[in-house]
Image (tube, rainbow, N blue to C red; front, top):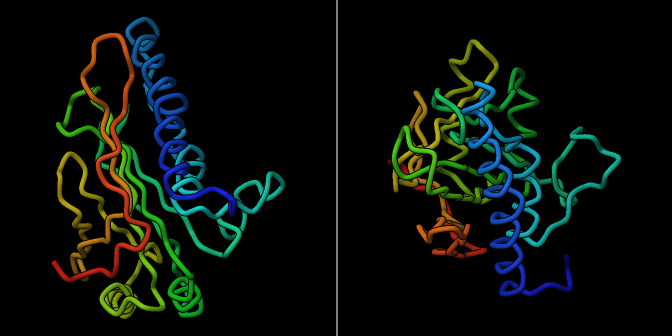
Length: 211
């Protein structure tokens, strides 16, 4: 990954979404009318591949099997998807001890990814977004997490992503946060072709702001 520049990674991210995400999802949408089953994709693993392309940081290797940090630099990845789903998803963060909270806020970065569509209830067009939060340099994000930790009961810090909305605001009972947008791509309505346009790319999008 280190030898790939941003332009190349952007092209690869576009191809990955067209082939591995939209291609698979379209097949499932077709089959669901026969089987009556969900068209949900495995957004977690697909999101990890995408984030490595966006960030330029590889995963921890095939042997990790999802345990520990998601990226080689110790960063975490949180993915949510509405594709083929009915309920609004959440980004879940298991923070049931004070040590877990501080470890979470010590991550070099946390990548929040979302697969959705612009309009609720529609199968297409597919939209993909990735936001980057760097907790050690982000006072707003840390304040919301610590405010939640002072009164938490479940041990699960939940952020609600901006599904079916052009907003960058993630909601939480302890404070809403405008997340720094790094990547946004949208499927174009071209008959017979799954073509994706990368609308936004910023590898250093800044910090969160209160919303």
